[in-house]
Image (cartoon, rainbow, N blue to C red; front, side, top):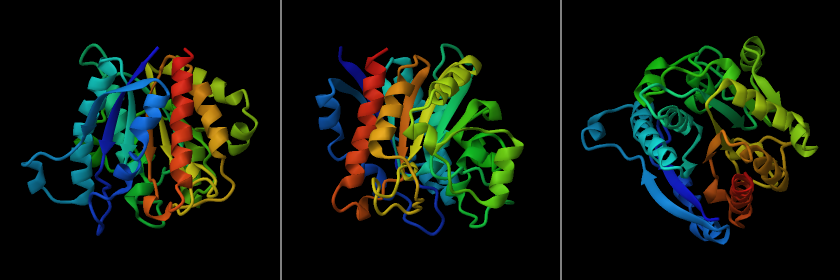
Length: 297
């Protein structure tokens, strides 16, 4: 049976003193349509979350990213309501909020759905401005999404209410700042370790079941540095000891078999450093694993 897919591209990166729309999201599209067709998928919708002419008059990289993510949220919500499988092609992890808000808005009424998050990343991205050593907003999206900080950004995206801490599971996290780790421990964020993925531990299914019991819908977010650097060469924030592309593909298939898992987002592709397309092949494996799981329902 053909699986209908929606592509949601979020191009704004939210970084200060940087090119606002970088090439990373667009670069992930190389070969994507052909891959999906080979997996018997139809791209039934394609959207890009650009600012309106009025919003182009605003300033502030973070705020402009939030405004664009709000449009992206509407696009993702519409895809889910049409029973499409939304795949987010994301500039970086600041686009998390838009994907979550889209899932939140995808219900049959005005009432926001309860959204579970599986956060796949080498880093927790659970810093706040008070705990961050770098001050980089790219290290804060999970903290923002759970209401710990930068509420004006979350409100501009339209992610309301913020996610309760129990709605979050982290996978593959292994490089965390000391004060960030304290926050993770204090709030009891559930973890799926690299070893769990390597062994395809029952914990993977147990965590999806736990989230499914608490929430209405589940979103899977992948920062590509969750992979070992061998499988995503040239990443901006590499961390040794990650999972392989095949291990993550298998994990995706397991996760996407659950009917409450609806959306996938892929962020931070180091396209300019991926000269041999090793990283792009890893991205294709991740998507293939998700599609195989979705089709096995």
